[in-house]
Length: 138
View 1 (spheres, rainbow, N blue to C red):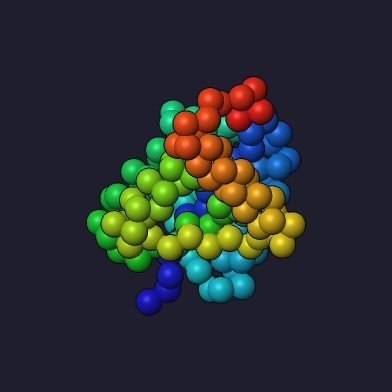
View 2: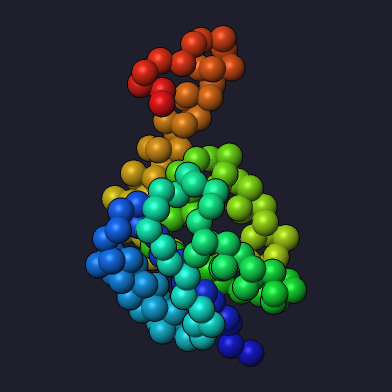
């Protein structure tokens, strides 16, 4: 049985070429792996927003598969969210739905993503230690 995948692409700006590039990279990965693409979901807008219609349509599609193994292809985990708590919530939902995430990430993007994750963790630690948030924390 062939693996089924969806592609999720997002750009923080209304840059259609960035979204198209993401889709093409993910489609290339799907072709290399012999994966059938069942849907392409995309949008522009900040990843920290909860009201992303393209993302919600993708989640509805994944729920409709009732736990069948599905792959979500994206060019970076940051497409889901740059907020660690939001990313963890989505990852937990993916686990419940039997969804894997694959991404053809160039190493520089992994480093940038991890830098953002560690910065977010540092901010949370600082706030927990009783330190007031500064202008740089926002």
